[in-house]
Image (cartoon, rainbow, N blue to C red; front, side, top):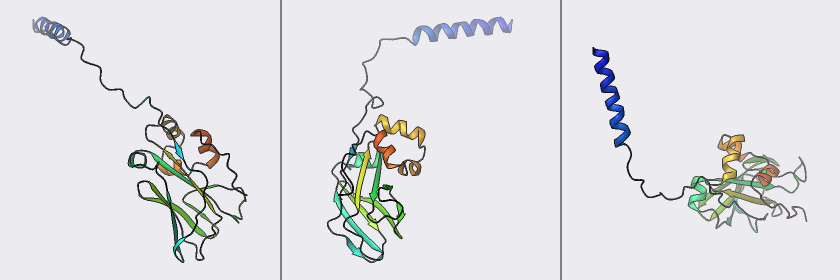
Length: 178
C-alpha cells in the first residue's frame, strides 16, 4: 500500500514539474565573449635610446598604448629580447625574463600603456639590444588554444619566440641585425 501511494505522489510531482516549468521564452541575452577573437597586439623591435638607473639596476620605459588594464589584467603579455653580442647565438631571441651576458633581463608594466625593460648588468647595457612585446587579450581564441599546450602562466611566458609568432599571427618581417 505504501508503495502504491509513493508511486502516485511521485507521478503527481513529475506532472506538476512538467507542466509548471514551462512558460514563455524570455528575451535573448547579450552575446558572450567566448566566440570573439580579440586582436593580438605586438610592437615592432625597438632599442632603448638611453638606459636609466645605476650599476646593477638599469631600465628604460617605452610607450605601449595597447597595454590597457583589461589586456594586462585578463590576458597575457609576452616580452622578448635580442642581445647584441649574445654568445649563445647571434640570432637568439629570448623570452623574458632571461639570464644572458652575465645579467638578468626582465620587464614590468608599472602603469597601463607603458612597458619597462630591466637589466642588472654591472656596466650600462648596450643601446643596440632589441626588445619586443606581444599582448594577448584574455578573450583571444588563440590564447585559449595556447593554454592547452602551455597550461601555466610561466610555461606560456617561456614560449619560444617563433612559436609565439606563429600561434598568435605576429608579423616577424623586421630584421633584427642591421
